[in-house]
Length: 343
Ligand SMILES: Nc1ncnc2c1ncn2[C@@H]1O[C@H](COP(=O)(O)OP(=O)(O)OP(=O)(O)O)[C@@H](O)[C@H]1O
Ligand SMILES: [Mg+2]
Image (cartoon, rainbow, N blue to C red; front, top):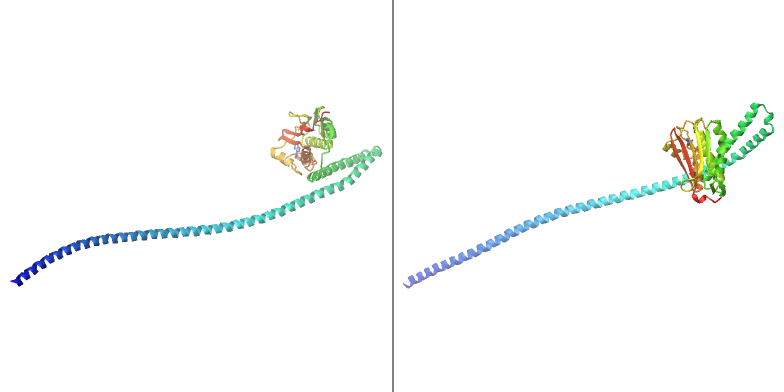
């Protein structure tokens, strides 16, 4: 019996033990399951984390690659830009050198031209004055005893020589003006006297062309100026008015004070006139207006207006042209009010 009992006990013990073991095993299993679940969750989380990390890493690496590409591109572009800038700077330096050389050449050529004009006109003027002097001497001494035809030849010699002299004088004045060698020699004067003297010089030309030449001169304007140069301006302007006005036309010469009290002179003609761009051209040295019907038959080299303007400016004044094709031209020379004197 004791064996039975022992066996039962043993059986009970086994059963209890088994149950305990089972319970323990169950508990263990439950714990293990929980642990496994946790482990699974952790593993899943780790896997997700890894995936996320991998994705982030991938992303970062893509971004890193793109950033590196961008940086390389920017670097290359900067280098190219630097090269282009260097090339441009060197081209600019070269064209700057070229320009400086060309400017030097132009200054040298201009100086050579001015020297040539000045020397040539000086050399021509001396023999020409001799021709004029001797021709006038012959006119006086033997002119009256010569047959009419030969007297006319003598007159032609004198007239042509004077014409040549005026051209040479213009060239000489122009080259002196360009070289800055022409200076104003001020003296007290009366504007009306200067203008009248200039008009007298050319009145015959107006009469020959049957052009009415009227003067309206204020006798009260006294001033300090270079008389010869102002007379030269006035003679140039009236000569132009005569040359470029058809027969039967009209020229008005006025001098006085303008509305601002400045000594002024004005030559108005009823001639062929000019457009605004032709006026600009006319004021440039050696330029004549090709559409002007009188230019071909009237003498001249295109220096009268630029010289006149330069002479007015030498006095601190100005020369202004208002003109309209077929209606005429008005040239006004204005001197500074400060040039007025009491008497
Ligand atoms: N009063 C005017 N009416 C119309 N055109 C004019 C007048 N004055 C000047 N011009 C134009 O302007 C040009 C330049 O005038 P400018 O006096 O300088 O030269 P020019 O009279 O031709 O020659 P130069 O005066 O040297 O003998 C003339 O050739 C002419 O075409
Ligand atoms: Mg002229």
